[in-house]
Length: 522
Image 1 (tube, rainbow, N blue to C red):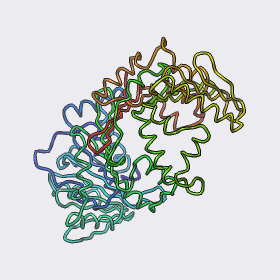
Image 2 (tube, rainbow, N blue to C red):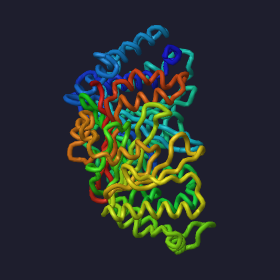
Image 3 (tube, rainbow, N blue to C red):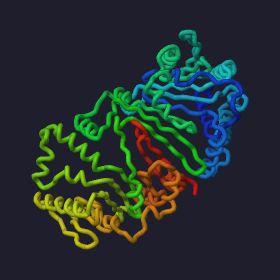
């Protein structure tokens, strides 16, 4: 930071000040009205846009401060950032005072867009933040960019004055916004957007962003189809076949993720039309809660059999290019003793879980809920007969605890693959004991876990679909991640604060909506 401040680069100074304001709500609300919507200077086809509240207040501010204290042990995170910024500026021969230089003109909302996705990177970016006083904002920009050994060039475009640094960073103030971009050409495109087509006027954007909750601190809009186009419109035929089979239409899709800070959790709300006109619905929380309490992580999906059947019908109709002709897949499998349609029609919800705290103890299973015990037992028996007919080695019959078989092979790892049925459930898992645990009626389940109960409560009316136990997941990760991994070592002190991760999902009209909640600080 000192080198950046020495060159009087206003952008990092401003961004750091915004970060401090965002995480702790520095200062009070502006008495004057703020400027235009920051999205009004983003190009209409920008595929990624992040909108954020610069000055969170009330409960939001209190929650952010509580999270900073519980996760990092910091009583005043915003103050700490500003103190470090001002100390760095002083060390670099600059003086910077947020309260005097930024707070008086800083508005309420900010926005950042990304564009030009290529080779896994964005080549263009621009941002804007509302200001309650254009004159004071210009004074700040002029002061920070004047003098020093960093050459600054003045420019004007469509009546908007701006300044350009040697590295191309361009900054100007107009329409009640402080606007900056990484390149002069991008800044000019933002001026053009403000006078014509812009993201704020795009129906896809407004329809998506309207579903963002009012209490969010930041919202991320993604035009999924736009990203695919910028990346070269490359979806291979097999992937497209799979997407069509499950009803996913990525080229027509958008998504919005919203960040909502709580006092003891962080919530991310997601809404998307990615799954087309028939988003997944249903409630599989009963199955999820019945999985073993020893699960490190688990998930469940409702009406899996119905969606599986629809997908198989789609693949069967189209065939698999170069492998299976149209209308032959189900026929060939049925002749081999596998009636996919019958199996799919008998399956309801599906769940899966992982257990263990080391590589040697790692196990888990996928659990299928069927209509009847007879159907479950017959399905497993038919799969076993099919594998034997293909000459699959290492198959051993299971008779205790469930009916089914296991397959042992050095290529499959230390434990066997197990396919078993008991009651109306089918389990397909890794390791005999972990798989049979899904049938244990007298053992502890996730529903008995206090952390799981807290996760369900935090999701409210949204059905829980996935759960990760924080301490157990960290213990397993510590055993699997190399001890010299610097990134994991740096993250571990913060990961110890995570109690759980919970994901809930449901359908809302033609949208799939989800909540991800990270419980922290217990």
